[in-house]
Every structure is written in structure tokens, then in C-alpha cells.
View 1 (cartoon, one colour):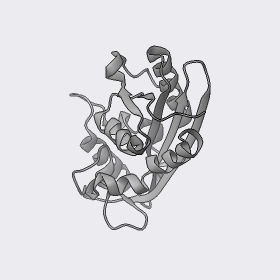
View 2 (tube, one colour):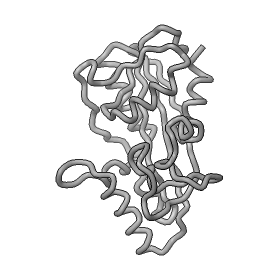
View 3 (cartoon, one colour):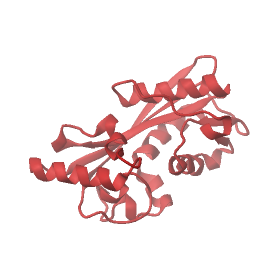
View 4 (cartoon, rainbow, N blue to C red):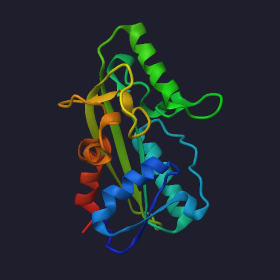
Length: 200
């Protein structure tokens, strides 16, 4: 599957931070990036039990609703001492009264780690799915190893970034500029594989 320069690509997300991250990553390829809101679409319910399954659910729905080649991701944090949780439920841990609150999610993660007394090893995982309106599909996965730190550090990025410190670095994702994070993140790892397959 190849995506030509000058073409349009739907990124199946309503998350402004995630959309901006994809726009930055794809800027060198001169592709026009559109989001779900450009088509009045919303994200479908994530009904699968894996990152790949949920990414495909979103990409297929976006391609069907927009008529465009659609890129979707499902990503999350896996903490070894918590049996890989929150995993596919990473965003769900932020849910509560008043909507999503990732500060609440980060406190929950650290609180559970304190209870089990386990190591803080963790990894951010990202699976990208790209789907053409007429059915061709491709999936790639990326990963960034690191550890959970406390207290929260930094105010950039989004989600759990302020408590995730990647291996080989002394700052969290929340303390890094977007340009630096985009070189080493789980999404960047998956993106490099996607570029090798899809972008000319």
C-alpha cells in the first residue's frame, strides 16, 4: 500500500494532541491530514481485546465514513508489575465524573504500584492500522521501554507522559519537547515501520 504526496489522509482520532502529533510526523511527506471532526465522525466503540484489533475497528470505520485512506492507532501503557495493565484500558483509567482526567489515571497507576510493591518497569505501546476504502489493510506496531516515576514531572505531551521516563533518558515524556519525544516514542517506532511500507 503506497500513499502519494499531495493526497489526503484521515487520521481517525478526535484527540487534538494525537492529531497534532501525527501532523508533525507526516509533515515531510506533504500529505493533507484530516481528522474525524472534518467529516462529522466520532470514534467507534473499541470492542476488541488487543491494540491491533481496536486500531482496525477505528481505521475501518473512518475509511467507510470518509471514503479516504484512514490511519488509526491504539496505544497504551503496559506496566509489568500490574500484569500489563492498564494496556488497552489506558484511557479508561482516566474516566470518571466530569470526563477524562489523566491526573486521576496517573495517581491510580502509582497507587496500584505501591500496593503490589513491584518494579516500575513499563512500556508505551502503539499499533497503527491503515485501511483503504476498498478494503486493503496493514498493521504495524511500535514500543518504547521505560519506567514509571513519581511524582508527575513536566507539562508537555498528553496522557501518562508526566510519569513515563524512557530508557536512556533522565526526563519524562512530559518534560520533553514534542520534537524530542517524536524521535523516540512508541508512536515514532511504529511510524518508521509505516513509512517504510506506505510513503514514497
